[in-house]
Structures are given as C-alpha cells and as structure tokens.
Image (cartoon, rainbow, N blue to C red):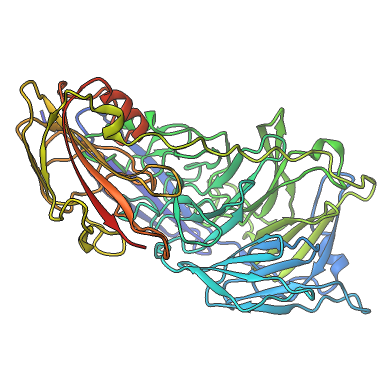
Length: 605
C-alpha cells in the first residue's frame, strides 16, 4: 500500500496589498512507515508594520508607552542608529553593539546638557554578541570571537581573535555569547535555515568554549535560534528563548522558553511547540518521530508565535519590587509572518520556586493599529520601535534598546528603595569528577580474544590528516579480523586519552555492526542510523555531534594519544537508541565483549 502524500495549503496575505492572495501548495515528503499520516492546512500572512515617525520630545514618546503601575520609563539615549545587543561592564557602564555599522559603542554618563554621546570602542564587520568577564570583554561576529581588556576609561585594548571558525551564518548569522557561572564562554549559533537537516553539527546549538577559545563542544542542540539566554539566579539553571519556525501559520510555531541542559536536544527541526510534529520535516533515516521525541526535551513555557525573542536577562531584585527577584525580562522584536502582529514589546517571565510559570507583556505601546484577523478594512499597523537589546544595570534599572529608531530606554521603579540584590546567586556547578577508564580497559575481560585491526596508520604513529578536524574530518577506513566464535556484532570506539575534558574524549562510537561486516569505508556520514552497513548506529560524540569528529588538540599541547578499538560482542544489538550518549552505549556493552583489537594514533596540536 503506498504511503500517503502530505499537503500543506498556504494562502499568502500581504500588507499593504491586503486583498492580494496567493494560494501555494507544498508537496511534502511521504511520512515514514512507522509514523502516522498527517495533513495540515494553514493561512500564512506577511504583515510588516510601517515605521512611524518618533516624537521629537522625549516626554511625548514616553507617553505612548505603557508599563505596569509603579514603573517609569525614560529615554536614556537616542539617535544611535541600530543598536543590537546591550551589556553592562562591572564598572556599571552600558555598551551596545551595532551590527549594521560593525562597531561597539560605549554610553557614558550624560553631559551637562543631559545628552549621552556614544563613543566607539571597537570595530569589526558584523559585530553582534558582547559579554564582560571582569576586566575582559568578549565580542562575536558570525564566524569569529574576539577578546580585549577593558581600560580604566571604559575603552578596549586591541582585539585578539580567539575563535575564527564558527559555522557560516546562513539565515541566522547573529551570534550571541555570555560567560557562564562556570567561567566558560557560551556561544549561541543559530540554524542556517528555517527548518532543515543541518550538515554542520554546530548549527542550531549553544556551544561551550574555553575562555581562550582553544577548545569547544556542543552544549545543547535542536535550538533553531536562541539569541537570548541567561542563568536563573535562584537555581543557577540556564534558560533560553528560541525562535519558532516560520511559514506555519499565525499560531505556529510558539516561541519556546527552554531550560537548557548539557547534552539536551530541543526538538528542532522535526518537532514544534510541545512535541507536535513539523509537517514538512522528517527525522533521519532509521529514526521515527517517536524516537526524536524521546531524545528531545519539551519547552518549559511557550509564548505567542512569531513574537521574535531577542536578548534576555534575569533580575536579582535590586531596586525593584520584591516579586521581581528571579524573574526574566525578554525583548520581543516583533513578527512579520503573522496577520495580527505579535511582539513589539518587552515580556516579563514570572518564576515561582525557581520554575517559570507565566510570560506576560511588561513594556508595550510600540505597536499601533494592529489589524484583526479576517477583516480587510482595519487600520494599517505601525510601530514606534522594535525592542532587541536588554540588560540590567547595577542599580536594577532595565535597559531596552530599539534597533529600528535608535533609542535606548531605562525602566525603573522609583518607589522601591532597596540598595542591594534580593537573591543570592546560586553556587557555580561543581567540577566534573575524574575521567573514566578507556573503553578497552573497562570492558574487555582478560580472556577476550585478541583481534587484529588496520586503519591506514601504524600503531603508535601519527594519525593521517584525513582523520583530523583540521584536515578532512573523515572517519578512518577500518578492517579487522580474528573475531572469536560466538561473535554476533561489532562496535568501534575512538577515544582521546589526553583531552582536558571530558576524559577520555569520545571521537567516535559506532555499534550494532553486523557480524558479516569486518570492514568500514572512510568518511561515513554523521547519521544516527547507517544504510551501509545496514542497521549500524552511531552515538553522540563528546563534541556533541553524531558520528565521527576528528581530533583537534589545542595548539601547544603535546600530541594526544587516540585509542581506536574494535570490540566483538556476543549480542546482535545493544539496548540503546540511535544517537545515544556514549556512557549509555558503554554500559550496554558491559559484560558482552568477547574480543578486542586496538590501534593508538597520535594527533598534535
């Protein structure tokens, strides 16, 4: 019986030509045999509110904005062009990156006339992300990360590039970064597309890098574009607001607040909202939607679709009412893919007992004349700005930047007189325990048969360039022999014994290799389930991707010893899923190894 073909019917509704419609039909790949048939009909709109002229007087502008009772808004600075990310130095000075002009500006105290004259302190094309760590500042473009010292007058020293190979930008080139409680550098790398199977495993992730940029790994994946993220001060947990997929209709996909944990996957591109299948996407071969759901974490909270969450910051309660402590504030830049515009506001995310419970508008008034769905005679929507940057000052003031009209706003609660923070920051995460034994030492009993392995390099010699991350980043061609009687499957493990962490670093783990196969070709795809050899599965490596990733020791390190091991098992299939965590694969193999062979190759920094 043939599989059903899925159809998504979309009607394109645009402004200002409200009466123009264009019916579109997308032919979608058939559903997998193990997945249920689905059909979706959606109406898709493109509505871009017109930019309105700003009132010349600050008082007239402020009167058009709304905050909850007791709070006040003031214009902190204007005529700044297109400020994007905001950051506050330990000295309490506000900075803004400007992607379009490729610079960072410092906003010092107001002069005698009340104006703040921006001072350019750094320049690089496409500068976007900014984060301070004591007397250092980190800056990010689409592919590069820089570090500089902060001078006594607030300026920066010459920029030093510490990372030059972040994935190319694609659809989402705006990198953001932060220094975590553990002292490591966290970098958000958006997807290269709206919804697709990425070829670079670092797309649609948050990376964690050493402060010198010499090593990094994927911290979490399945995150389409998490520009705003921060650590909840009460619990120390990392939260981020992810952008939903476009072209799914007015109410699809919700913007997602995720609690982001190491090794976590968050649904993109095959799941939307709370584990709802994305109609025009299918998991990799050999995986069902149920498999993808099982390995994904649902959002902690959802918010109106297409609102476009940008910078996000938690508040410790300084200078604010008591109930603000531990809540997050998020700038929502606003929709273009929705008939009734959403976003164009700042949202407050309320937390109770360290958990998010509600997201509600906090600063509004930027959007005017929004149309009502289904009517063509509504007033044209207009906007006074698009909130993007958001930061908290030492006195508790909430700073909000608008990248469309070049204004930075300051929100305070004058009636509150608290001098210090209401929350004590959570303790930094504990250091990881000492590394585990190598796979061969842990799994192979003394009576295991000795097997012979060949892989294109001499035992104890150097790994070929083709196997290195700086080379071809290709898995090796392997052959092996000498498997004992009773062998029912094989597994391959490649570990770096000298990595700084995790130790050992798993570069490759492939299992459920059929007993009839005793060779692997070079350059296997980074897929959880392979077609050749059929049914073989690959684990997640320590970098955070799936399948093979080549060694890349930091410059200056002694050569790292990489152990390439072939294991003969007495069971045909491990009781773990595809893309499993290496620890789970090793546990499943424990007690089933009856033969083993090893080569050791060295990779220099």
